[in-house]
Image (tube, rainbow, N blue to C red; front, side, top):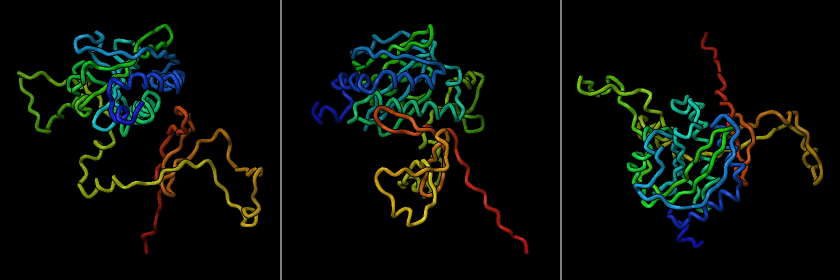
Length: 298
């Protein structure tokens, strides 16, 4: 496929999406889903086709999980409706760990489902109250190209749709309800907000929106992130004597977690994972900064 056609999310890339999913393996997609669905899943990739605006699955007229994979000005979305019966209860109101699991799934999907030339620059994930209305807000470009992925979890079956293009990613997800005292008046004519209807969308940029401009500018600084397997100190003459075939033994078990470093600071621990044909790190715990105490007495 030529570079011009690959520069945008158009229906023409349907064959490439299917090829990417098949090449990188339905098994890896199933593994990523299994970690969110809390049960082993199998996936079968279907044939690419399109949906007309009035001819979409009936359960899109209801709630579901929406994962947006943002490419330039557009995005592709992965849709799994609650009507499938596959989604776990926790996804409706995820805690920080749940939000991280959804975000990890979105990142994995971006690498597993889209062609390499269209790797997402960002991802968002969360529950929406009505899939069809969300697509309408997101300015879905009809006919909507899609690839169905048949999912089997035990005796339950469902279909996850990968669809594109979406023009307004920021409009896809439900807006948060106004909290009392924030200027939203409640009257007898207006029904109370259903607190369970809004699920926070994990979006790193929104979490820091309240910071002053000078502080937000610091968030755009690029930092080197690296994964450390192990380390040890050796004498200089031992290092100079290293050569091909020699083995360096570390005082670390093969079962121990790897360290995620930012600069010289350890920020998290995790385990190595394979995402497509790339290496990744699944975060298992966050490392709190080391406390330092200074004597302030005389």
